[in-house]
Image (tube, rainbow, N blue to C red):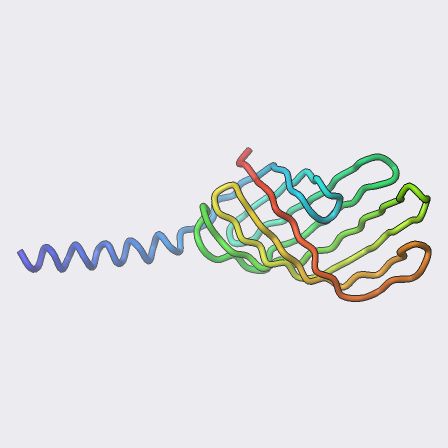
Length: 151
């Protein structure tokens, strides 16, 4: 009886290790997010193994639009919940009611956390552009919060 219990414990431990390291399937996802680059964005992600490429963009007329793309450096966890480190780059343009133009290009590193369809993705980026007609360069904190569903 003790052998059966020990075998059951060992088998469940090995199964847990294998489950925690399950491969990520090849999959496309579509969704929506709030945040950079254009406030309310459409999201697309193509996942393949431990890598993924993604695009986030929004267009609210010629006065406000943006796009962001990224690639996963490494993903850990399971398909349902995981963490990944991503390289991101993007551009956005905003023209306010006083015709003052803000436009930035940026690139940086993103920490991406997903649980089922929900995700949060804060980023540290280096940006360069113009704000109200003046050159503007520096480091910024941006992010996205949204949902991605399997297609």
